[in-house]
Image (cartoon, rainbow, N blue to C red):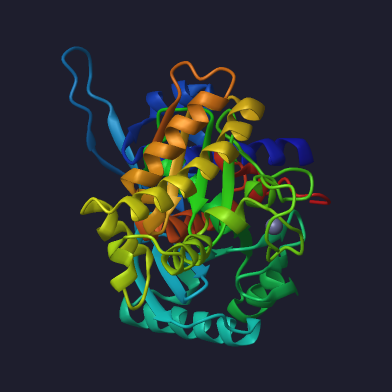
Length: 403
Ligand SMILES: [Zn+2]
């Protein structure tokens, strides 16, 4: 009996997962995609329809044969919460039954203590649910993204240098305070999930999502599955050494990629270069920023172009390691102003392709999701927590050690 019930549960979450991905779909198409029999699909659908989770929304248009009835998740049957605990802002997003981001609330705050960050997130959640008139009972789970190392299985953020956090029980604390199942992931892993479901990687099975901004990290999707590694820290390419000596890094080591290719690394180098007697428009710049350096580069300033290209070259070096080790179909670059700069991207692309051993058919492109990637990814974590057999996010779903 236990086995039969387990199989029913798996089929149910497979069907729910596919309905979430597909939007509108017929029973026979569900059967084909999931490789299940039509009677199995019909039994699951009947159960879900009885609970008000799925409803029929019309007929397929077919040139020949009988039109099939289309099914869809009832948008009001469940809701999910996404929470992003960022370096300078706390953001909360509301997702519908398909885990699509529908509304957001955020507040700007610089690195906060865990308690202040949780208080702010909870305040935003209350506000959002009240404004959108969503009863708490409709919310199934929450997903949380944090710019730090997240230990697999424990839901603990063991280190977030840019937040100043160490060993913070994010999952347990927020689960207790929200009264919901909560899944925590690194922001870059969350963004990779969003890119696979909603962004420019819907058509590939294996890709690398590289975050470039105040830090550097990679989300690795291999054969349509996010890979977090044995401990959960896969993709920390920002802490690979690229200089033998080099400057100290937030992780406690020296010469990491993060010491030469982040926003703050660029600004440090720019200040130094401006002080040495170089002719450059940046000399007149009272407050150097990524934006002002990018603007100068666009106007043809040699120094600004060199600085950006230098960041891109180092990033390309890091990306060449990832290409050689993982052989992805695509590399997506996302994050702040540096990730979309043409001078950074060009140098990144040419250095990565020159250094990697085989790059046939490989694209290196910018993400199109923008800032909402983290919240969209957090919603997918929540969905996976509620429906643990959602393929892409198996690592964050039900297959945890001990479950
Ligand atoms: Zn480091």
